[in-house]
Image 1 (cartoon, rainbow, N blue to C red):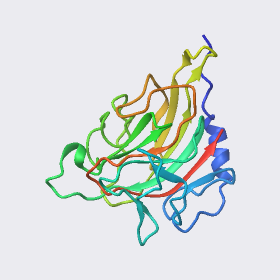
Image 2 (cartoon, one colour; image 1 turned 45 degrees about the horizontal axis):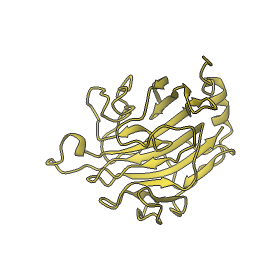
Image 3 (cartoon, rainbow, N blue to C red; image 1 turned 180 degrees about the vertical axis):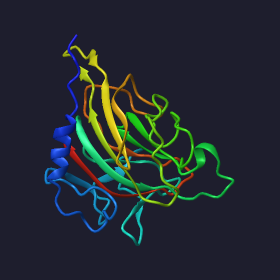
Image 4 (cartoon, one colour; image 1 turned 180 degrees about the horizontal axis):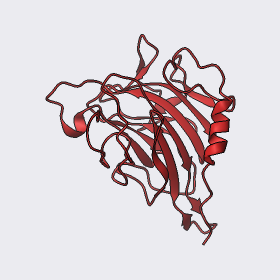
Length: 230
């Protein structure tokens, strides 16, 4: 059986980030984009996104600080473009929901890689690591440490993703693999994802979009989203 295509070696990843250009005004706390990056959201427009349900124009708003905010109840959004292997960067801030919002209703969203594999977003500061809290590969793997900051503080994900490999007959030869840095802390190291996570689209050989989740209860904010396909 063929071995999975390796992720970008750490030294190569650091070299890539060393080529970063000046960050846009909306990227105050996060990693500036390397020259090879394509911006999915830079604070000026949601044109790179559509509603995940039907492909209609994005109905999430941009607030006064240039952050894209979940329009609770409107539905999740996805990129117009689809991707295979990539390095993805985004910043997010979870809201400080009222006390009656408990469990999975606290600051919940998610980043779905190819629309299939969720890296969880959640108000998880100070909690033990879990496979359904911030930084988790949802229901598959808890982060090695909980790197979550308090609600309303900006946080970063840097996600290095390698898509599954498929044979010409449509049979999967190798699972997807992912490494994740949360606020600069390495929380997943080349983790093998053995199938889609909850709510994810079915696996297949075609590329897929980046999806940001509307969980139905939390006005999570996003900024400085860029991707380097590879």
